[in-house]
Amino acid sequence: MGTFVTLSSGQRMPTIGLGTWKSSPGQVKQAVVAALECGYRHIDCAAVYGNEQEIGEALALCVGPGKTLRREELFVTSKLWNTKHDPEDVEDACRTSLAHLGLSYLDLYLMHWPMAFQKGKELMPRRNDGTICYSDTHYRDTWKAMENLVDKGLVKAIGLSNFNARQMEEIIRVAKHKPVVNQVECHPYLSQADLLSHCQSLAVCVTAYSPLGSGDRPWASPEEPSLLEDPKLGAIAQRYQKSPAQVILRWHIQRGVACIPKSVTPSRIQQNLDVFDFNLSQEDMKQIDSFSCMRRFIVPTAVDGKTVWRDAEHPHFPFH
Ligand code: A2P
Image 1 (tube, rainbow, N blue to C red):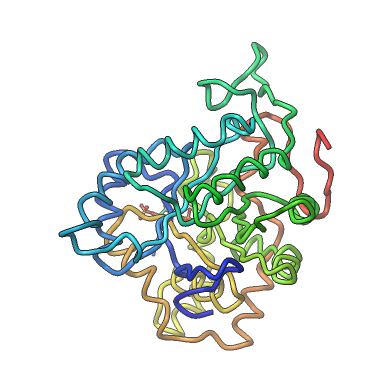
Image 2: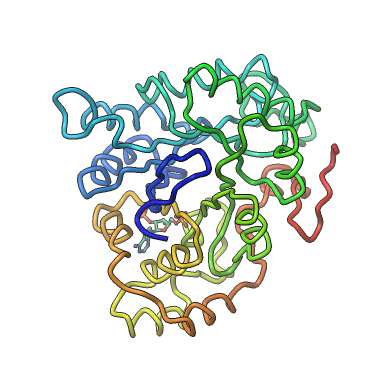
């Protein structure tokens, strides 16, 4: 994989994008400006991150007539939140993200999770006992509504996030517009080898979120291993005279995975794009593959106290 990947829609998506989950309003604007200034052309957003308005302010500074970039040079993704799965809510949700970002279209719109929450203003609607209120809207119906967004020109392509192989195939069976991307948690401790080969066989590009292991996830505990500080990774990085983050990103790219590393630090933002001038050997790729230990950092148990989403090994989903 080079600096771009061609999606099944024919679009060229930059392999490295700027992640914006956990980038707070107040930090994200300067992060996006720094990214665009140092050459990023792919920004990954989501309604639920609560920062699309600030990202819109950054885009307004850099993109459009009289600015340094033309809109067509950018690849902007956003995501439909779980409370907006009802087909009648999908277009409004998309238009809200567009308004916040100050854009007339998105390059890619993803269904953020395969499960629907009760509709309404609460992002995490809960019962009195604290459990999440789900809705039984099926993701196939949500997908149909997302397809209308393509037909209306509001989005260039649609895709999935956090879908396992079975759920993805269910969408593909009914799709008029096929999912071009499945964005999932993926890093050396959770290599997603099976899901990746499955996606590749279906011409669905995998984008890795938390590609560096999301050390800043709010529920991280000091007992959990830190991927970026893994000594085995450090040893490889030293041999290539690159940072551990760069080695991880290179590993993703060489296995055909696009990545959206999050940073609000200009030097790291720059460093994370500087991964196209070296190659990891086959042996080093294999060694990093061998780190995988099913360590999932982003589990919706954090949302609900019980597992609501299962991986390929446990392909059952509570409602279907
Ligand atoms: P920060 O945003 O303070 O620069 P992920 O993309 O896997 O969610 O990881 C994001 C975390 O990794 C953030 O804490 C971010 O810190 C940190 N990070 C991003 N790029 C680098 C880098 N090149 N070196 C070290 N840490 C990095």
